[in-house]
Length: 296
Ligand code: 2YG
Image 1 (cartoon, rainbow, N blue to C red):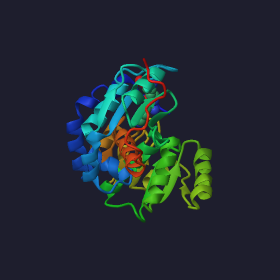
Image 2 (cartoon, rainbow, N blue to C red; image 1 turned 60 degrees about the vertical axis):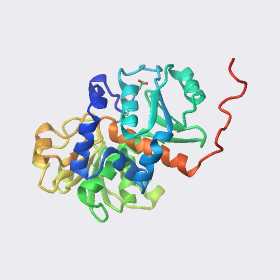
Image 3 (cartoon, rainbow, N blue to C red; image 1 turned 45 degrees about the vertical axis):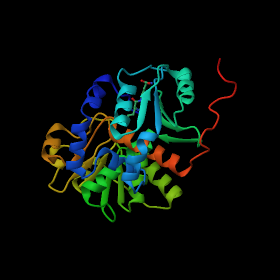
C-alpha cells in the first residue's frame, strides 16, 4: 500500500475542472461518469441530481504516521467538485467521527496507514478505496478501449488494487493475464480467482514478454519504470492506478493521451458513487436518532 505525499496531491483539488475536461477527452466521460460506471450506477443524471442532498464528511486521522497535509482537503474537494454536500470535520479521529454523525453525515470518509474507507453508518456498509480505485480505472479503460469483453488485458502488480482490477475486468468479460515481479503472488492470485470466481486467468512468465503481447494494460505496481516507450504501440491503452506512475515519461508521450493516471480523483469518485448507490438502495427512516442521551 503506497502512502501518498503532500507533493503527490497538493495541486489536485485546484485543477479538477481541467482534469475533468481531460477525462472527457480520453474516455468520453467525466469524473462523475467514470465513478458511476465503476459503481454500476446506470443513471448518471439521477446521481447528479441526488448528490447535493447526500451529506458527506471527511475525517482527518492522526494514528500511525499521522495526517498527510492536504489529504482530507483533496478528498473533500473531489467530492464537492462532483456535486456532493461534503466537508472536512473540525475534529480528527474519534471526535471527528462523532462530529460527522452528529452533523448528520450519511457517508464518512477516513484513512489510516492501512485502509482508506467510506463508511455508510446507517446501512452498516463500507467502501474500500483499493477496490473502488480498481473498478474506477477499469471503467475508464473500458471506455478508452471501446469495450473490454473478449479482449486480452494485462494486469501488472498483484497487490490489493491489481487483485480487485482482475475482479472488475472479469465482470466486464475481459480475458485477463497477470504478472508480478514476485511470480508466486501472480500464481496465488490465479488460484484465488479460480476458487472465488471459478474463472481462469493466465499468469505471464515475465513482464517484458507480457508487455510485448498486450495492448490493454492495468499498471498497478508501486514501481516507477515498468512500462517503457518500446512497449507502446498505436493500439496501447493504459489504466495506471499505481503510485508512483509506472509508465515512463517517454512512454506517456508516445501514448499521446491514451493513459489514465491520478493519485486520488478516480478512486474517490468511485467510492462516492458506490456509497451513493448503497444509500439509494437502502434508504432508512428519515430521522434515525443520531445518538442516545442528548449531548449537553
Ligand atoms: O488523515 C490523514 O491525513 C492520513 N491519516 C491519511 C493517510 C492515508 C494513507 N494512505 C495513502 O496514502 C493511500 N493508500 C491513499 C489512497 C491512494 C489511492 N491511490
